[in-house]
Image (cartoon, rainbow, N blue to C red; front, top):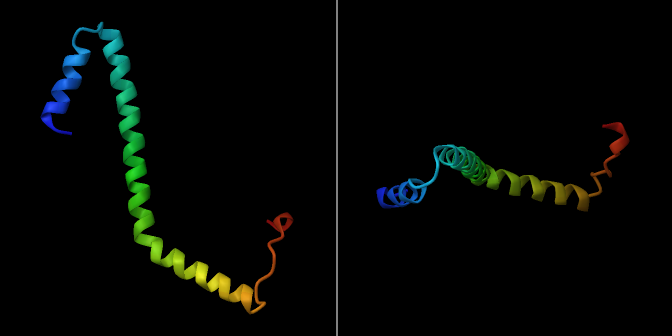
Length: 76
């Protein structure tokens, strides 16, 4: 975030009572943590995407060759 954006948020919060400012900070903290988690998930997915594609192709090939069996969820 640019310093101008940070300044804008600070200006928006300045006139608010301190308890409300603290509540906003907590909401922002949670929101930023969620965004960071999402970014990490996307990065992990991009790193393994080729492996996922290869696994899907193998699965399709095994199904086509009759090597695959339907999953019995009762055995899990």
